[in-house]
Image (tube, rainbow, N blue to C red):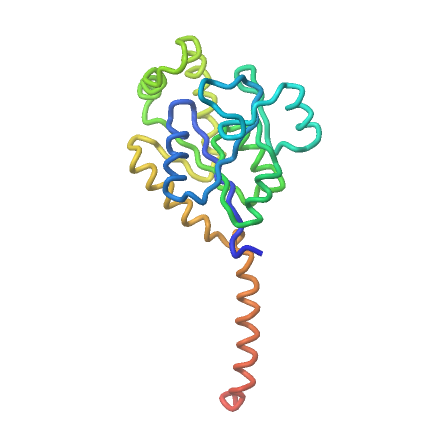
Length: 221
């Protein structure tokens, strides 16, 4: 048994708040953190590789996996299905490896409500302001104006879910926010529920205490 169970680290935010960049920074800080590769029904974008960026599935394939209980969470976003395959996540936490999720509030909610919920660490990333959120979306130059408008409209609903998370960070300075994220993960790894080996250590200490008492019985006289 691993001395520590893996954490399911959930990062959520409205588009443009910086969660993908923070996820990358977190893995650069600790390369042992595994990134959860999501499945999706949307077509690959230029340069994306199946199995590295996403598992690209047809809608029928995706729905079959949901029906078979093979998805830890799933949701429909802008007409496409997204979800997390269950098996790789279960294997990772049993081995003591943390798994990082870059997902929206719906996916985060499903994971927290699942059988693996007690191993989750959920963090919501807020933008410093709405004008700055819009500026970041425009500066990415990856979406047409109508998509940016939809993302902005959706942001208000996404931000309303911030109280559901364990931690909330305002990403007004990327380096500072990344440092705070690292501090949170370091502390949460020591959460008692993540350390199954502590039980054996306490049992050993109790047994040693019994032996000590026997060998020092004269001290109790």
